Image (cartoon, rainbow, N blue to C red; front, top):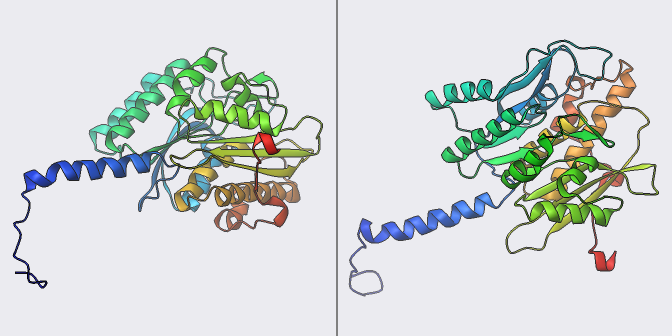
Length: 337
């Protein structure tokens, strides 16, 4: 008998327990996959982005902050240029990866049992073949880790101008977006992906809801201008989770009258890294934006040109300072806006 005095009960057999264990495992898997963060003990990111010999864009802008914030990064460079294309000239046009090049690397990782990634991060892609091979790569990652988070920065253009061939836009919209966990478009890219003209905060929410309906858990419109306000850049974040009301936050940033390259790549990487540390959307957004602002301030103060002073801003990556004016504010529902 046990301590209560009742008779011993026969323990269930393994065959009887197996169905229950499968259900428990499935429930945990579903809960994790519905989240924007998978806070693993040993996070490893596969980052597929552009690379420049000089300057900080693509992987050069993303890898250092990811590693600084405690994440291992496996790096695949989709292109290798001498410098970014904002300069008067650049070289390396022959060093552009295609789908076969990417798959060759993936096969090597698979052969050595190295496809053990908690996250996939992608940025600039130049061809339909490469973009679709990225999705095949994601399938391989999720075959090993079904809860892997895909952070997609859909680098397509800005200010009404495309950076990529137009044929990639429907591939992003119809094939990439449904597989993304977190999407970080700018205003122009969000409009391209949703066919929603964005002129107000509520327009941005409408666009985010369109992306949510396709399966994206978290949408961050990394820079947008509200019609009639030329002094502020707004960052809009929207997250949906099962059984909860959608979270909508906005951060207003004073416009800087200077152009920089690589800030979008940096922002996407920071969002990924901070979601590894916390599931609080406001903290993720505030810390990410605070770091970007600190990097820009350091870049302007050093007067060394427009290349991001990323290495010199390491302390602000590790421990960002969030002033009160940079705090995230809830976006009220349309009916009460």
